[in-house]
Image (cartoon, rainbow, N blue to C red; front, side):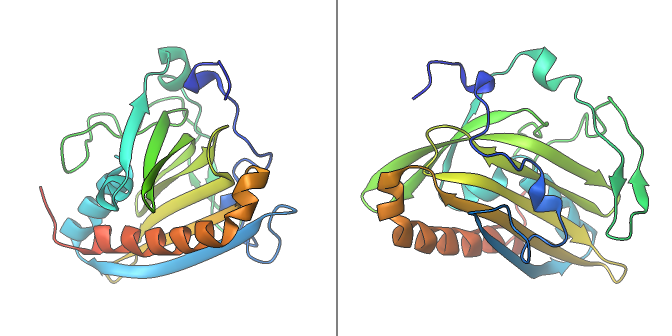
Length: 219
């Protein structure tokens, strides 16, 4: 394990941001296994607000059974983070470039602060009779009027290497949807030996994520 502070550690893969690629399933980064799942969470303004604020405050991970240990990062890493112009699948710009925090003042349903790009956390994940520490860093945050979410990348010490994103979207009819996209592979040789178990765990947690956001709204 690196002696660097969590916020100093680089991510453990090269294709940072590749979960935004529309052709991820067909053309994942070489050597990585991609997944994508899209489910309807419900309908209406309350479901929309609950879903996206839960997502951006680590509520999905906590609600699925993980413990989230957020690491302190210097203000220079998170306070002035450049947010580039976003584009839809047709190449149309959807938000302006900015160095402001457009989510300032918002909180999660439990009152916790929303994440920023550059935030680092250690996810304590139950794995059979054990708990596995899985350090991650937020590599981007999506903040559009009807589309919000984030992706994290794995750091050294995570069982897997790769990236995963959670995107909550509100469609014109008021329906609220969650899209989960990821690409990953075992990080070390001994995790390759446990790869069938890792895949089962990933499958189970993916469905737990969906239930967290589609369940009763708690405020």
